[in-house]
Length: 183
Length: 125
Image (cartoon, rainbow over all chains, first blue to last red; front, side, top):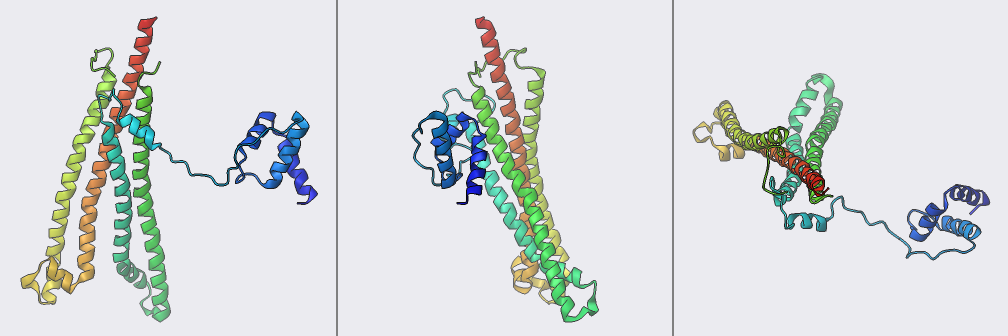
């Protein structure tokens, strides 16, 4: 490592306050920070504290966190004091079907676009009947691009709102659960 | 939330929201049925519209979906996908309206929970 790079890392980390630097050192996230950064952190901590605190086990990969904790959702469904106006099981059921519907909508849109590809080509081709083989090829390319864009737009317009509705319902259910017995 | 609901506790706003939620639930079923009927109408219309083509191909006497599939698979596949798409739209409307209904009920429930806690707290003092 060149001294310039090390100096840059040192200057950057040296600006951080003690708590933040200590948290970074102890978390020991080897995915987020390089080996050199940890060397520099050690040097700074040694200078500031006179000793270097122990570290946690190194984090070598980030586990993707789910938006919703399944255990928490089960807790809501199995709560002894159930809500009056709705059934939590119905929310989870609806969320599952919204997910299925989102995927089915995408598949149907794609199939429809595929089946209409010939018609789209005919429309594009009709703009220049005397174009010959070159125009035939170009018109197919245009038809494919237009169809793919159309399918993508249709999928985006249906898929994401349905997924979002499912997520919103689960968030509302968690909020309702948290509001029970609040002091 | 307890089942005992006093008038000042369960306000007009709550009533309005639960009414909208109830209407959304009813409309969910209406949308599903209407789209189901529309799917059948569309299918019959498309089959009738195909009569000239069937006459041209000389299978007018036995025109049904199976013979249409046999003679003109692309058209039959498109008709089938479109019909399923129409009904599926009804399913999406049903799911969205059910979701809106449930969401409104949850908002009412959450508000009443907070209200109940606030009232309990003021009674303790």
